[in-house]
Length: 267
Image (cartoon, rainbow, N blue to C red; front, side, top):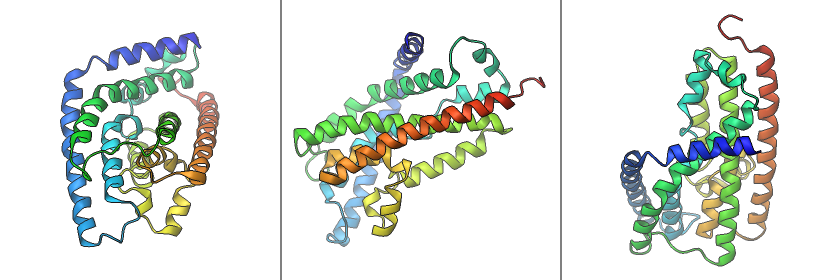
């Protein structure tokens, strides 16, 4: 484990150096979050009783999503990994006495955490200072805050495990672009990134909440806003654990298959 922690530490330290990129990201995410809040306000004013989440819960969902964008967005994958696979430079990494799956997992996790650490605090402070119901509200209870941190940790794990499947799938393709575009589109739609899952029709939502994408940002953000609690919270937590284990196992199996058929420089 020590060698993988070393990869994690190096990537985490490297990610903290991009402060200018973090500043531009903070401004972009705050503007985008403000536009989403204004959009939802217009919808709620037109039909205030037609929505499954209260306006303050929806606004909290939006601000928390923007603050922790780097943790859950599928499009924040590492171009370096894709380039190494396409160019064949992954051969150098295969020569190392480490498992490539665990090494990439540690790097990807550190990359997301470092980006989120640089960006989350300013967005949270500004959102908390906004007037109700457009700002970010406090959690309903200490238990809700505890569930938020627990489900956020599991949600990041599920996100990284899914991205690992995308990375390794590129061993079987000539270009990584098609796999990436499909994966990003699917995650954005089914994880609640574009529209919170409670806004979907009941029958559709019942299916979506069973998929691994719902175990990414949907669970922690709804847990914090108070929209997810009680038995539904415990069920979502168990699903997160299941999908984390299932995706990691699938990634390891796919890695084994890729290593048997990998071709580098015609060899």
